[in-house]
Image (cartoon, rainbow, N blue to C red; front, side, top):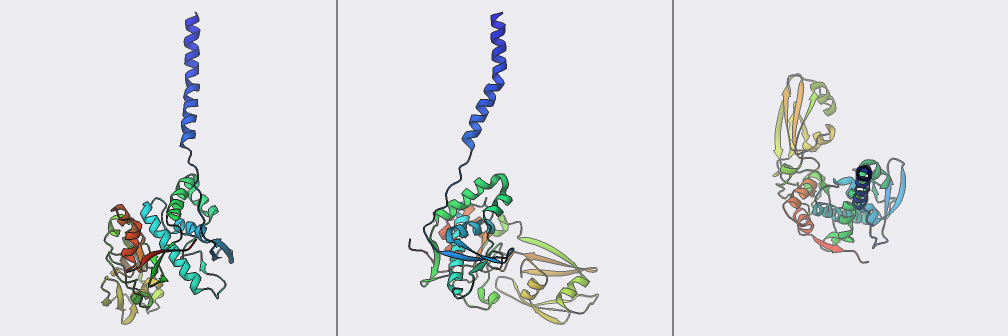
Length: 312
């Protein structure tokens, strides 16, 4: 009889032991949020477009929010670090250029996307601690670092996905910038889902967006492409445009595109995503996956630049 009671007690206690062991193991898996390090008192004046107010944000906190807003948190650490240095360089240049203005940057794609803690918790939900730790590690490990050319902080432009090459800044922004020249970026096609994209418009919509008369027959003549295969100029139904005209008017992903009429529709196939100048973010991810370090990534996309460090 005693044995029966003993066996019964053991059987009854097993589920409780399992729960206790599970809870203990679960507690061990809890991730602690790492701390963002501050080595600078530099303040970034950010125009928050949703509220039309200017917010003063400490530099490294701002960089954390930009890396989180501009690059997927699960990207390789070396790519995240490259983004942190590029974004820090970009905003330091903006601070220099806007010292006599009311604010330095906006929090949107006009400059750099910035997401605050509340935005990120809503975006990442249960993954918040894991993801913010990845971002903070990249920011902390590159703290105070920026890119310089001939002793000056650079305008570190970046974009999503190249078409295999970046573009010369002069062809896009009409400014000859020695460190923003076209370079090969062969990694993008393997890692970016945005490398190829197809958009479709009705003929009516297409003509309306370009502000040219309707014609049932569409004629397209590509006049000039850059060395990186992006369209510089073209003629559509006897009206001349630049590739940037169509990029802006039609909201295309790239100026490397082909236009085809199919019945009463216009199909546009694009290669790459973004203006093409500076660092390709997916190119940086591809380089990181291939074993490149963040300084190698940065020096590839920003020609003849060096990593410098702000004084503490």
